[in-house]
Amino acid sequence: MSPFLLSSQSYFYISVRFGKETTDDGEDSWSRRWYISEDISYEELVQKCNDSLMEEYPDTDLTAYKLHINMTSERFPVITATNIGEALREARFNEDICLMTPSYAKHPRSSVAASNL
Image: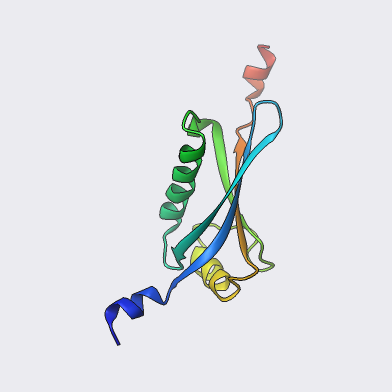
């Protein structure tokens, strides 16, 4: 069997629906369909999410947001650095029904900043 076939076996398609909090308490959203490896590292997945955000909203200050990578999975509703391998293996086997939902939440204002308003 060719090495390409072996390495491509861990790749799968996943639907990704993004959300980003706006300043007026609304949400911007967009979708992608990724061809992704279940062997991707957490850092690479975060970078892939950030790249998608910056493609859609290039003026976004990433330091103003916290990224939560959620998934429609009973076992792994949130993807973390600890569970990413297992979560994506499950997603690959449930490709037709699994949805990744990264969301960018605004960092809460500090109490000091809020008291200065």
